[in-house]
Image (tube, rainbow, N blue to C red; front, top):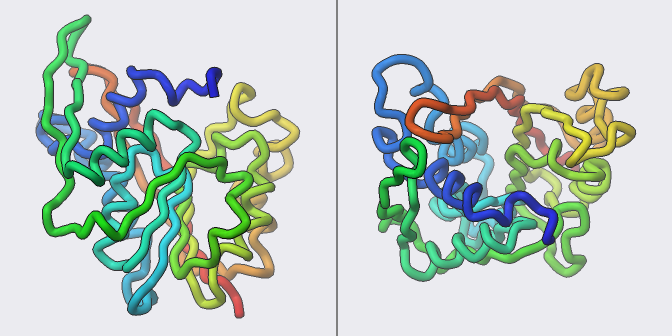
Length: 249
């Protein structure tokens, strides 16, 4: 994983802030951007249909990053597995699981930073969650099936997204739900153009739907903005394509 940019401390700190910083700590302005905050939380509160989550549910968070969505899933699910390719991200998620908090350095300007104490809500049962390093394209064979599977902003960062999409019917229980977000930011350094969905990304969502049919039925499709802070005056504002699917019996 030496070539994985997500092993860098710069991105680790950026994603810790993205996942856990208070809203005013991320974006203190009264204009623009606020609608895109708390994306990892909204992936669960908006992305998962709570009425379809059974008692004792198992959930899988693929590309879990530093773990905020996994913790939020634990509010509804008895067992949550979070998997990410970055060992640095998994180490941070496990520290948050163990201690309930993690220091985060927010970049403000130049080399000026602010140390923040980033915390997991005390109401969440952290013992329900297991984090592990792994490749979403080759999830271990003995992981079992899940009532809820999420893959947030992951698809367009995989070298071979079809390997994951073909595996999903084995991972989601019949009647279970799958939630996917992606800005479809296809870049050669992550995904060779031959592997872009939708006939060379002419219509990526159509390619996603073809890959999931007929095992999954589309329940809902919508746009979800997200905001990643680089420093006090620079932010990445992106719009992910969100879709919720139900595994056919």
